[in-house]
Length: 75
Image (cartoon, rainbow, N blue to C red; front, side, top):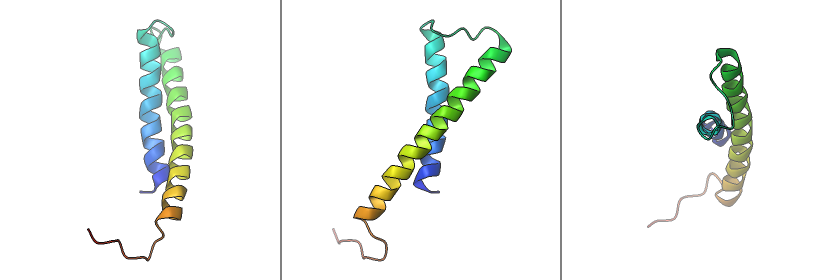
């Protein structure tokens, strides 16, 4: 898996957890089914996009500092 897909998966989970946390502190009302699913879906999508962006940037940074093809230093 690439860094972007790892970031996207983590972002989806964090987005859904954030929606549930906001419900716990009485900021959102998740008592109705359709709005609750919309909030969870929107939170997952936004979290996934942000996580994918962060993962992509971190993956590019890692590859810039650790070029492929070079042997790893011995420990």
